[in-house]
Image (cartoon, rainbow, N blue to C red; front, top):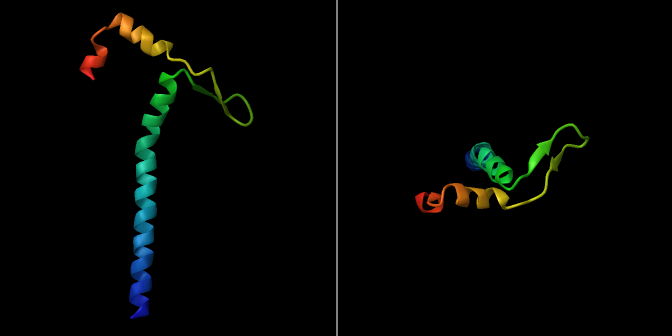
Length: 74
């Protein structure tokens, strides 16, 4: 009886780990896009790798000027 419950618990733990890994894989491009929209880009030429640029909202202001209805279309 305890073997069944132990195996079941292990399967549940593996399932949770796989779900967390899958969610991380799917959210990584979204996080990358959000960081890039604020002007942060990875600088892989340094050790350890770091983020180059400063956080700015200028990109969003330019969108508002070039395409005034952009925010309504979201």
